[in-house]
Amino acid sequence: MGRPLRIGMVGAGKISGAYLDSLAKLDGLRLTAVTDLDTGRAREAAGRGGAEVAADVSELVARDDVDAVLNLTVPAVHAEVALAAIAAGKHVYSEKPLATTREEAAGVLAAARAAGVRVGSAPDTVLGTGTQTARKAVDDGLIGVPVAATAFMTTPGHEAWHPDPEFYYRPGGGPLLDMGPYYLTALVHLLGPVVTVTGAAATPRAERAIGSGPRAGQRFPVEVATHVTGILEHAGGALSTLVMSFDIHAARLPRIEVHGTEGSLSVPDPNGFDGLVELYTAGEWRHLPVSAGHPGAGRGIGLADLADALATGRPHLAAAELAEHVLDVMLTLLDAAERGTALPVTSSCERPAPVTPR
Image (cartoon, rainbow, N blue to C red; front, side, top):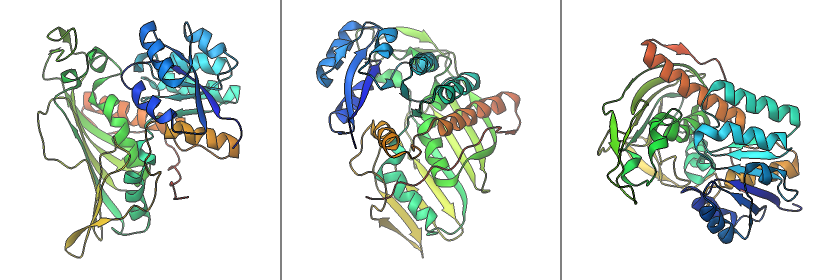
């Protein structure tokens, strides 16, 4: 590989620390510029990454030493920042979700195609050894033909630990759009795209209180559904049951399980890169050794894969088309919950290629 892909980071909030840790270890990437609405945070992040501070987004995307923009802003402006980067001829890698509406997502993809640049999107956790080892087990037929899956994300809410949690409870937030991308992206890797959804949603509490930081105790309104459940029909016929909740104090539910005609598979938390994969056949559970995925990966491996894909001319794995389909599945699920009926998912995507050991 030639020169590292030079990265301009927009947004230096809480998630940026995980990316900064990874960027320092990935030879194919080099952080060159950072901007944030809070200049103090921008300076701190730039200092950690050996980069310079840009005054704003327009200055950052115009820099000659920025090849790609790492978009770590709040979801409501993901599309706006992506479009600014694309207009400047830069590649984009965005935190999830890709956008908050179908129209925004389609606009980002259309602009990227017209400009001849690439767009990638989190989550890249599915490229780690956990989801990929489970996927190889499915692909190798270890559970027979997949017939069902379950996916559960339960928490009492992010306000307990996040000092500025309001955006999680505004349009574009909620447990489905915030955490759903991890679970749905993993399910698409495991079982393929989704064709039909049905669901229900609720908002049990109209207000929440910040639990940490300088504004602890301050109350704020809840504007989105905070408990969402649904049934997803995959193109191959398997049915997934999904629960995403900010209203459950504690649970002993599995993260993801996949059930087939010959056995069952326990899949680790898709919000992490690794974890134990267990297979049930012949009356017993057994651990599966790591057989696929990037070992020791962290947030940013999807961006590193995009850089390698650019250098080698192959498709990148954390692709915007997959993120667009996952967004459409989530929005269709919310529409189905509101209407009280099953709805078709009008988008689709290719099942991503597996990550094989090198």
